[in-house]
Image: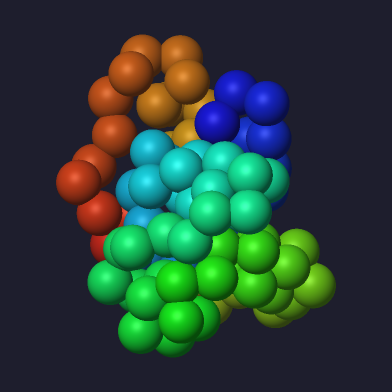
Length: 94
């Protein structure tokens, strides 16, 4: 999360509020290491392929606006999680 705060926020926005900052960071780590991610959202929408999630989040980053997909709110959540260690169970605060 600290290494890629903006990408973490884009994964949260791409998930439409399903992913928390920690889950988004784990998805990014799994993508980097070539491992599947067993989160329900990733498994059902991407067949567990964490790389596809991260690629889509980055490719569609300009679309992260509107209901449940606000990047700026996701980024604030990531910053809060980094600074205080506090975060919601889900990112559905959007």
